[in-house]
Length: 255
Ligand SMILES: [Zn+2]
Image (cartoon, rainbow, N blue to C red; front, side, top):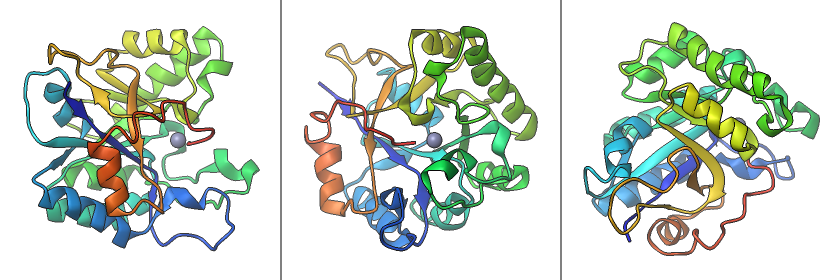
């Protein structure tokens, strides 16, 4: 069975002081460089979700992996983009459409450091730098706690807002469930809004099935969690062995 890892990052920056909540989700630029360099040396190409689509559908085969960033941090542009460009990789950043140019206020109650999110001009720089913008709802919503109508609004309106804000060749085609929380209504709304894929925080690689056609559920794709402490050896285990696939339970709170 062919498998494709989709890496899940959040922030790329100098990590906050020891003991800070969710510090593990801030990957140092040097570590990120090692991750990309390791996969590049092995002949793998990192791709945005749009570029990964034909591989997920089984139309193309090759040494590829997906790169995703959740939330839309400004440090993705400042610290990750130069490294992505250096290796010729593309990636998808899932942006909270109603928080563009603001901070990760949804994390404030947990005492997580408030850091800037990309503004509209920075999002355009991200896209012009060969990267992609996807949607992460309007408000970083816990979708499974909302009514069907509220879910539909978060999912379709965020697409509309981002498409009006950022000039991107194929529009906003990819979605990511905040906190990995969703239900059947969310999946239906993602489908109705015509997103091509949606990613979760379920850990594992995408299994393409024996026919090498479509993945089982393109709107519930698992990802490989990459954190501050993920060494390049650890990353290889996660990408090329069943290490990550066995951790199929959703992570408790992985934004
Ligand atoms: Zn998030």
